[in-house]
Amino acid sequence: MADRPYHHGDLRAALIANAERALAERGPSALSLRELAREAGVSHAAPGRHFKDKQALLDALALTGFDRLTGRLEDALAAVGEDGVRTRVLALARTYVGFAIDNAALLDLMYARKHDPRSSAQLSAAMERLLDTVVRPIVDGQSDGEIAGGDPWPVAMTVSAALHGFATLKAAAPPEKVEESLAEVVRVLFEGLAPR
Image 1: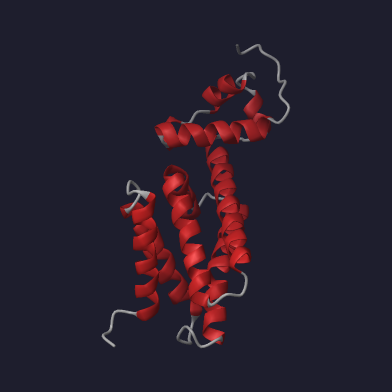
Image 2 (image 1 turned 135 degrees about the horizontal axis):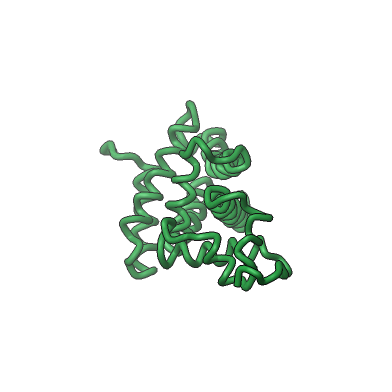
């Protein structure tokens, strides 16, 4: 098998797709460039044309995840248009939680790679795009008077942390229960904890 020549239409995409599947099934420690090459039907050296090592593969996988999640969040915002900020935040919440539940291992990898000092500048930029997408409705809500003024980043971080925790807690729940509970979480985020 080691003598097999490099022939593949889009090896990089195939390696990332196979790596994502293996990540979901077996976790990041089970990922191997040699095994991914075997699954793609190419020589064990062929992945080296795209990834210098396993860390580069993990970065690429995390980058793919951030790009996909950001795209879905932007699509969700576009779908609700300029409806009120609560509607926009709920759309973001539904999309994020859906992604987190469907891609738990990938999301864990995304956040782990983001904090790794060896991660690429490209990965940092992808994380910034994701954060900008999340903070945009917060800033709009502050401008419209629907969210208290001040620095929008602590608000965005609170929303993000609540949604991430919610997705972890509800990963195995039936979808209708997730939706019902998620709407309540967004209500609490908007109305706060203080009595009215």
